[in-house]
Picture 1: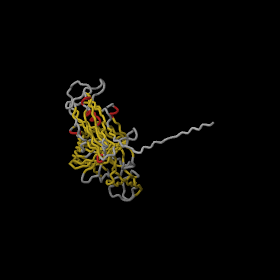
Picture 2: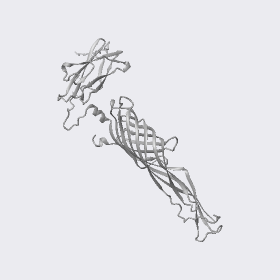
Picture 3: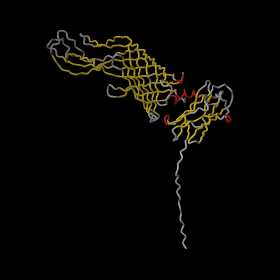
Length: 433
C-alpha cells in the first residue's frame, strides 16, 4: 500500500499594517561631554518617522537615576513641547546647558532623560543618557580637552601648498617653485566663536613680454680697416628688433583677521568679513631679447660721420629693482569644503596700497647707437584689487592643488597674474596635531 504525504503551505497575509513612530538621535546614547570653566550648551538633534501631521515631544529628567544635580551641574527645560511636523521635516533639537566646573572631585555624572510622545493615542518613550565628566577626568598621557577646545582644534590647520609656477603668457609651463604656507585659525574666539583669522607667506614668479615696448635698431659693420669714404666703403647693415621682457619674483607676508558672516558655523560652506594687512616684496628684472630681422651688404652713403660697430652686436642689458610695499584691504573670504571631493578657498579684496615702483625707460645714444635702460622711481597711493583662489582635490591622497592670485591697480592698470600647480601638505598631520 502506497502512502501519499501532502504538504500544505499556508501564507499569512496581514490585512492591516500599523505604522509606529520611531524617534532616533543623531548622536547615539550615551553622549559624553566634559565640564569647562564656563557654562556651555550642547545640542543633540533628533528626528522622528511618522505618518501623523505633527508630533509633540516632551523631555523629562529621571531624577531618581541621576548622579548629577540640576542647577549645579546642568540646566534643561523639562516638559517643554518640541513640535515636529512636515514643516521642519520632523526634526528637533534637545538643548542642555552644562554648568561651569566647580572643581569638585566628583566622578562622571549621569543625566538620565526620557523623551515621550504620543501616536494614535498611545504613549511612547525613548531613553537618552548624557555623561558629564569632571574637567580633570582623563588618562595620564592623554591631553584633556573640553568640548569647546575640541571645537577650536578642529578649526586649526597648518598647510603648505607648493609646486611649479605656471606661466600663462607664453606656452603654459612650469617655471621655478611657488606656493604658500598658511596657518588657518578661523572660528575660535568671541560670541559663537565667530572671530579668528589666518596668517601666511606666499611666493610667486611670473614672466611677460611688453609688446608695447618694441624698438627697431640698426647696426653697421665695416668690412675693412680703412677710413670711411662715403659711397665707396663697403659695410654690413643689420636690423634688430628688441623685445622687452620682464620677470618678477614676489614674496607676500599677510595677516587676515576674520569674522564669520553666519552665526552658526557650517561644515560645508562659510563666509567671512576680513581685513587684510600685507607686506609685498617684489623684485623685477627687465631685459631685452634681440631678434635679427635683416642683414645685407651695402655701399650706400651713411653721412659724413657714421658710427660703426665691432660686429659683436648688442649685448642685452638687465636691470634689477626691488621694492617693498604695504597693502591694506577689506575682503570676503569664502571656504567651501566638499568632503572627499574638493576644498575651495576664494578671497576677493579691494583696498589701498602704498605703491612704490620703478618705470624702466629705454634710452638710445644717437651718436653711438648704444641703448641703456634708465630707471625712474615713482611713489604714490592707489586703490587696488586682489582676487585669490585655491582649489585642492580630495579624491586622491595627493591633494593636487591649483592656486594663485590676480592683483591690479585701479582705475585701469595691467594686472599681475600669478599661479601655481602643486600639492597640499597638512603639516598639522605630520607633526601629530
